[in-house]
Image (tube, rainbow over all chains, first blue to last red):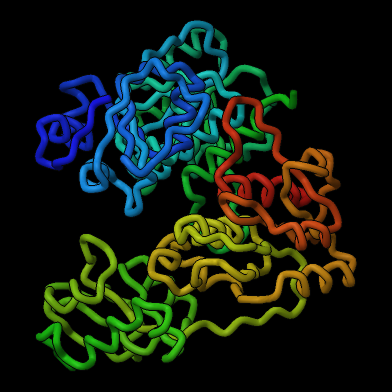
Amino acid sequence: MKRIESPKNARVKQWKKLLTKKGRDETGLFLLEGFHLVEEAIKSNAPLVELIVDERTAIPPGWDASVPVVIVTEAVMKTISSTETPQGIAAVCRKLPAELEGVKTALLIDAVQDPGNLGTMIRTADAAGIDAVILGEGCADLYNPKVVRATQGSLFHLPVVNGDLAQWIARFKEQGIPVYGTALEKAVDYRTVPLSSSFALLVGNEGSGIRPELLGLTTENVYIPIYGQAESLNVAVAAGILLYSLQAVR
Amino acid sequence: MKRIESPKNARVKQWKKLLTKKGRDETGLFLLEGFHLVEEAIKSNAPLVELIVDERTAIPPGWDASVPVVIVTEAVMKTISSTETPQGIAAVCRKLPAELEGVKTALLIDAVQDPGNLGTMIRTADAAGIDAVILGEGCADLYNPKVVRATQGSLFHLPVVNGDLAQWIARFKEQGIPVYGTALEKAVDYRTVPLSSSFALLVGNEGSGIRPELLGLTTENVYIPIYGQAESLNVAVAAGILLYSLQAVR
């Protein structure tokens, strides 16, 4: 088993590059951190390249022994960690393949930049049993460590792809799948929309909402009534309310 | 108008103390940052003590001129800011009084420690028209700058108080107001609960949920079905789904 002591080791420098989008795009790899995420990756047969384990940390019994393990010092783990208190376990994973055949329900996300919001929406789509998540232009990078963490492993559970939202909206509509945007004007109360087992929901940027050229392409736009004095809901909360409300009860 | 140039000024040191819970508790004051929050405070007649304005920043016309203004340098603003790119405007505010008479709907929060989640839930409760939010033991401090920011100003719109949740649950039940906890076991699908114009919702810690001694006190416990492989929903998303679903449609 390989052991790396120095944060200046060349391998450590390569891992560190995976903390940047450029480094991830050049290598096609990303970093995972913590027991829960690495375990979700193993359970989901994600394309893990190697486990990185703090020398003081025990690998839980039952974890797949076929993935190479690199033992590192606390100093090395701190260098590659993007959390304040690293759990002592990380992994390098290949970016995930995504299969989008037969998608009947989807969450389309336009320019959501906050990593926590983006990751939370992927987690919510997973929980709601949605088939796929499609990230349009201007979204945070799926493999940003903060996004990965906020998904709580859901990025291993359903396909999440980057795509042209205008094309996807057109494709869903061609297949007879209604696409609902979220908007404050020219929109209907979400509770008036017929429940369906196939639909796509489009949500947008935290500040500016969905860009108008996309809003004009949807089947219908919906709003969530505000009864108090808040100006709006957090986008991840709104997505949760809508994903759970628009689906026909199973 | 007073002008402060040095980050080492005694006044600046007092402001900086408001970034800690100890400092806020000792003084009964807290800091607000950014145009939106300060404007919400002014619109809501919050007990503002002073505005702190970067010398390069213009105070928007129409803002209440009765609050004293202190002009500061960029260096001073950076010292007291808890954001990476300060907007050039901040304010000192007295902790908010809270009136809890005649509350018919409430969100009860047990030990939610993430400031973003806590603030987002206060914002969601505001949007849903809930009458009050009650923070139990172990919650992040309401006046933590990250909580204040995540509320997007909703802390000025509805009463948010610290309280003993067991006592509050008892009080609501005495008044005939049902209290719903969220739990994975011994709970019913949230869609089976009768809609009501008065209810209290109890949500719990991100990792461990509501503590068992509180769960046993509720009228009924509910769960949100998970259709995919996610283990759970983010607590703020779950609160949003439930607050919007449990209320009788207006």
